[in-house]
Length: 330
Image 1 (tube, rainbow, N blue to C red):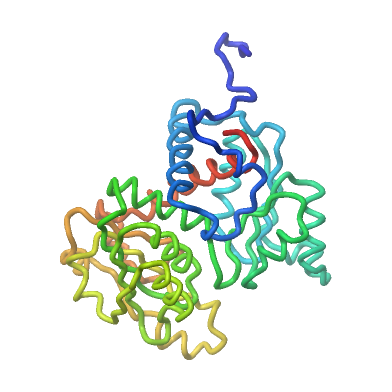
Image 2: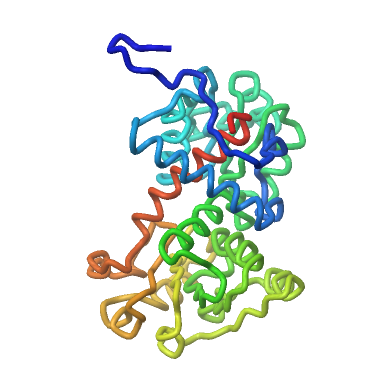
């Protein structure tokens, strides 16, 4: 089809990925990183790169024209909510945005299952963030439309882990052979839990650095060991900074603490600053799922090894790829 300027439009285009079968993603719920193999990740990232090239050239695509995505967020979000909204709209679709459920029927006592059924009556897929671990599974059990888990309490955040893996590959060209250090809140940090599980698909050395009160859950460590990975626990970042290729920093999450006094004890356990970066390799980088509070000094933002804002942009393209796959347009 030609537009009024005589140029060919991308109406109803699918995204080509020759010689790869993407059919299993069509209509899939995205609930956990356990759903993905290393081959799946490679395919998702191929789609991501194709989409990024098309967006950089054309700005937006029409592959999801007529599709409607419901963003249903029971917890605050800036990046995940906005990037999914940007992703569906850059693909030609539209979004129902509910970022504050206190202004919805949830405030009247509506139960999650009923809200999901309602949103499924209007939208073609639902992105859900909810404070309870396992909520995405509950939603998927009653929904006739695909559910994408955007964070279920302290459980998982699979699309964040996918964009994190993509960031590592784009920044360092590989994952195998790297040393990844995870720093901060490893107990409640769902981004850490999901990323660690995906890293088990690769040949990496994994370090956990956290105060005693925020160490990784034993169940997570046991799962990683069962999958052939033996994370090393540390409380001292300085001793391993020089060998770290990827430093994954997380904030201490005030909202996860019932006892505010405990939060006050651990909130500034680690701060990555210029001195920290002086002891690091020239070819390494720092990630953060954001938001940050004070765990990374603002001065570090000027360091080219600070990748957390590039990481956010990568995330939009990864989520565009997932939506295209789930809607069967690849």
